Image (cartoon, rainbow, N blue to C red; front, side):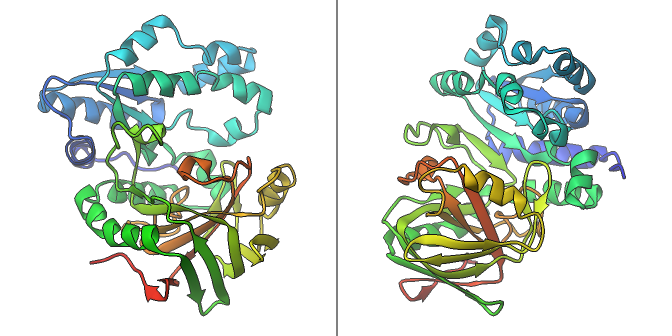
Length: 367
C-alpha cells in the first residue's frame, strides 16, 4: 500500500514548524537539505519556506534507482567517498537537514557488513567536519516510512506517515518544559523502580549522570556529546545512562521493538545482581539473540533508561521510545550517553503505562 501525496498545506506547515520552532533559521543563513525521491516533496517545501524566512537553501538530491545500480555494480566505495566540493558545501552550511535515505532500508540492512561499511565510510569525518564548522541541524524521521519497511514492520504506511508528521510539529518548548522535572529527578536520584500490572517490577541504579533531554532542538557546542548538533525530529524523551552494576527484577514490554529490517515483539528481560539473566520475546527474538552472542563484555549489563514525552505517537516504528510516558530500558553499550559500558551490543524493551519512581517518588512528564 502506498501513502497518499501530502497536501500543500501539510507540506508548508511541516516545513515552517521545523525551520522556525526547531532549527530557528535566521535570514541570510545557508540551509542544506538532503533529498531522495520519497522525501523530495518535503525537501522542496523546506526550501520554499527557508526562502520565505530570508535564508538561502540548497537541495542535495540522490536518486534511489541510481544509488542501487551503483551498489549492484560494486561501487560501494564510490558512494562512501565525499568529494572536496561536497566538503566545501558543508563548511559553508549553517543548518543541515537530513532525511533518511536510501528509502529501502530493508535492502540496505541485508547487505554484507563489509559492503555497508564502505557505503558509510565518510560518516565519522562528516560529523567531525560539521562540528568544526558549527553546523546545527536535524534528522527528520519523515524519511523512514517506505513501502518495503512498512511491509517488514506489518504497519499501515499512511498511519505511520501521519503520526510522524503530527509528532514532528509538537512544540519543542512544550517538550522542554515537560522534560525538566523528569531530568532533575533522574540526575539527583539513586534508585529507579518500574512497575506495571503486567508483571513488571524492576529496580535499577542511577549514578548521578547528566540526562540528555531530546526536545527537538540541536545542542550547540557540546563537546562531550558531539552528535547532538543534529537533533532527531519527532523528538521528546529524557535519557540517562544507568549504573551498570545495579539491576534486579523483570520488565515486560508492551511495545514493538523496531529493528532496521523487521520487528521483535513482547520483550521480557529478567535481571539479577546487575546482570541480564534472561531475555524472551513473543516473536523476532533472533534479532536480539544473534547480536547478543557477539556483543562482548558488558552486553548483559544495564545500559540506559528513558521516558518518552511526545503525545502524537503510539507504537510508532523507530519512535517507540519517544511515545508519551513510554519507558525504555536498554542493555549493552551506553558510552555515548556518558556511561562506562563499551559493549557493541544494544538491546531494549519499551513499556507504556508503567509507574516510575525515583527514590520512592513518582515521576511522570509534568503538565
